[in-house]
Length: 349
Length: 132
Image (tube, each protein chain N blue to C red):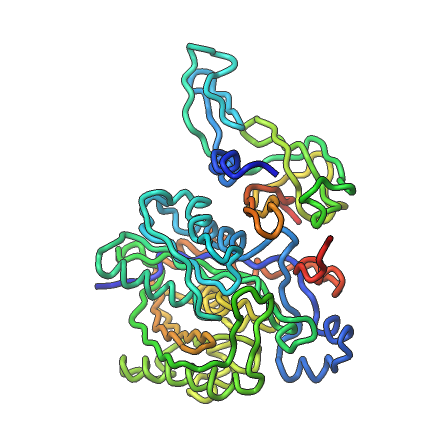
């Protein structure tokens, strides 16, 4: 059974805040932060944007690119750590807004930064088993960092939608296989009703990100009998610019392989959209026959690795919707005061 | 803001610009009409989803916002003529300096408002300049 990506679509809000501007407020060393994080600015949602509106825009871009009837979609799953409702699915809003309702199933996913790829794997299963014709998996977030917390320098907004199918003539990329590595690792969490997440500081690195990303990636390479040199591109979850570069090096992927998908320096960490954004940016420029190796990471903690092979159809669909580089050009830079307002950090009476 | 059932009844209209079109005279209606104003009983209406592109006919800048919109002020409220013909009132997002009579716009999906922290969140269509 061949399963793959029929179409994909991304969305990134227009607003950006620079690291210098956040550092100015908290008296931090912007130069040291930029060198350490390898992130220079991050995306900020508009006052009327949230994970649901971002998911809808990404899904509509995926639908525009696919050209398929929305009624063929049998499942819509949205992964996010910032679903606008605690109870009431984001996915029903998305499904209605793309015209996929009512003969379909839907649910929301949460697994820190890898909720989008978890949704993608479920769609692969449902499509592969023949339960549904097409499945729409989305990762979208307006992630939160507490004022003054290290996360505030990278917690960004954006989303990506992937339409998963099994009709080989419709696939823009074939997902050759997937592999996951999951353990109970409390490196990052947000309790019910709390506005901002907590994290384990440096503990998030080795036992969290690196252990899971490298084991997930190695597991898939071993399963397929491939090596990094068999791939044209590599994409690794990008919470900052440093971690994916280091993970790539540890696994044997080159700087050139990861460059097209490394979008974090300009938009920050889009959480559930992060790895999918890297995959989308890579699909934007990959050629038919190219192979992409991708590994998403979610705190808590787990990783999902994917081996993807691009088909001839990519050339046909690519320009039907904006590419990631088109979405992130011409940003509007805002200061911390406006950022605080956009993010609801200023509470009106 | 409107009540939950009142909003729910219009979800298709608000999310996806769903209106109607008369097969007889080919006039488009938004919000949807059940009877064609031109053809009356001779008309035949069918559902129609608007493309979402159009231009600004007129606009105003709201500084003193109504309850529930305080966090969005100042914002632009415009009359937009859709390419298929009908006009509607909507917010136009973006830099006020880029918004003029005749500016080409396209529809986007945004939060329209919410009933406080505990109430429902209302989503729907707003517009942005085609060339921001």
